[in-house]
Length: 352
Image 1 (cartoon, helix red, strand yellow):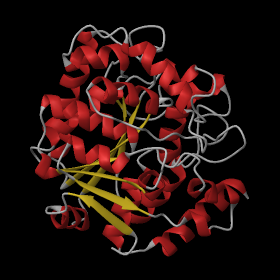
Image 2 (image 1 turned 30 degrees about the vertical axis):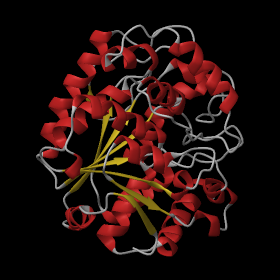
Image 3 (image 1 turned 180 degrees about the vertical axis):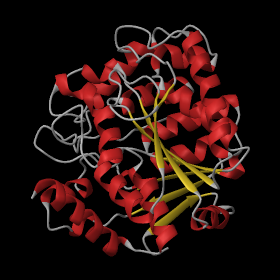
Image 4 (image 1 turned 60 degrees about the horizontal axis):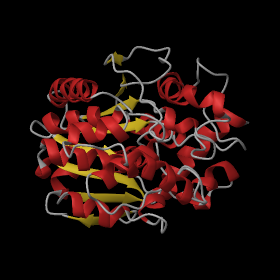
């Protein structure tokens, strides 16, 4: 518990911890895509514009194989900082938490066994609607079916995601649903002005207050799909949304379609909860009365600059890193110091 901070409603937190300690957790990794990420300067989720679309499938392949098939190396920033999937991979592997991949609108399919939703990728919200209302409805329905099925297999369903540019679409959805959001970024200097310009132009196209229509106009496929998963899964087992800004948007949309707050928590890194350019903790507490679990993965003490970068504002979160580390620590009893050694061992395997 020393490495965790708890915010929001902590009444049911012990039940969550117990459900993870039982050893019956399941991590689901939802990959998706929005063409909004192709706007220059909006994300660091890839070495360059042309490689961004490979980031979600490559992250999935890395979690599955320990290496990538879609690209030659694991996803990295333009200057070589590794994907937060490194933290996820280290956490899941050490604690023997099983995982599976769900394709919910990725532009490129991963080269591994996965569940396919048939969803299309989201369009660039600065110039056109992300999806149609019927696509949003399909995403919610498929999410509900899958969420119910997966939740019946586990005591705690952990849901992570990868969608480059997703903080911008999340920001748009949160604003459109009436929440005063300030959101994080994969870049230390959060491109707030650029995000505001994109979101303001997108919000002008909204002509209905129906949540499905709002997400269709300015969102991305991951948001309605994971909200659908949460809405049904939280009636069956505990659900931890593993992520930051994007999961706040999922929570906001889920609050419109219904979910069980008593069985829901959100888990993320301290790099998100301590991000002063965002208001993550206050935002989540305004959306839902659920626990917020924040973990310090200890990367600031790493001997490797690539790992220290997480604590310096790069990536901060992604691939369900925070929720995975939290779950691994709860299940195995390790602390941040021990986890750092595990992550450094994986870093050395990849880069030395």
